Each structure stands twice: as C-alpha cells, then as structure tokens.
Amino acid sequence: MRIAVPEQALKTYNYKGAAVELVERPETVYAGRVLHAKSLEDGLDGDFGARLEKERLEDFGRVAGQVRPERDIHISINFWRPGKAALGFVFAREVTTQEQPKGVDVYEMPASLFLRMYSDRAAAKLLGKEACEPWELFAYFRQKIMPKLGFVMAENGAQEIEIYGPGSHARGWAYVPVQRKQRRLLFGFKRKSAPLHGAAQS
Image (tube, rainbow, N blue to C red; front, side):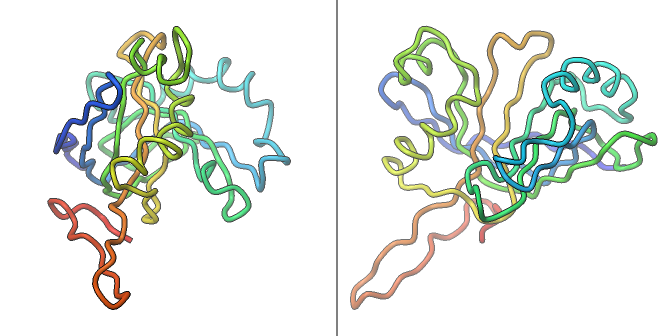
C-alpha cells in the first residue's frame, strides 16, 4: 500500500493566451487495461476502440485502491518516439496498491517533470480549432511550446498522459514529460540544468 502524493505546481507560462503549467509528479501506479503494439503499423492488440468502450467501466469497477476523486487516465506509451520502442496505450485509474484482481493490469510511471495544459477553448485556438481533445495537444507541445520554453522530452520512462474527470470526458488535461535542454558553455562543453525539487532526470 502506498500513499498518493499530489503533484506539485512549479511555474505557469502564458503561451499565446493559453496557460501552460510546469508540474512535478511523483512516481505513480495505475491499474486498468494495458494494450501493446510493436509499431504503429501493427496496431494495438485486439479491437482497441471496441475494447476501450466495452471494457472501461468493467475494468474500473474491479480496480482496487482507487485514488479519490476517481479520474480516468489515458497513457500513450512511446508514441512520440515511433520506431525506437514498443508502443502501447493504457486506460486506467491512479491507485494506492499494486495488488489488483486477476485480469487488471498495473502500470508504473516514474517521477518526472511535466508540462500540462487544459483542453479548453484557449488551447484549441492554438490548433486553429473551436474545441480539441487533450491528446491533440501532444504534438503541439513537442513542436511549438517545448522549444519556446526550453524543454525537450524526458528520457526517464515517463509518458504522455491524458487526465479526465471526475465524470466528464468533454475536456481534460494533457501532460507531456519534459526535462530542460542542455545548456552550452564556453569551449563547446555542455551541462544539464540541475533537476527541480529532485525530479527524475535522464
């Protein structure tokens, strides 16, 4: 049994009218369903869409030690690095125990820094849309926001996360794991920025 530790807000940026927050999330355990694929071309095992809708509530109803309030968690595993690692998708709830009923998968996320944004109208406007889903913000983070703010994707095993609820999936939070860019010094040497509050670094 573990105690759920809340994430820590470190800084808020105003990016073209949208709020982007830098947060530190502790090591976290999720329980639900994990789907795997060797590549994007292979697709996820089973009928992903059907399983997601058909089995979500059944799986969540059997998950032990759910953190309150219950929030639906979607995790995209390695989709930002295709061809370099096995891909997967997780739909789960945050839990306080790894001991789960048979058939309930467990996924562990290491502690990391994350940039996060809520999928409201200001976020959708960045994409040229009236509304958007959290996962649609992932590529925009990597291509636009992170370079501007001085971050790159973390190489510590943390993954992109969508957090919804409680209750509604109309809007949610998009999280991308980050670390600060290496800074160049004189004579071509490099060093890494010091970690913030003990956040995991590669």
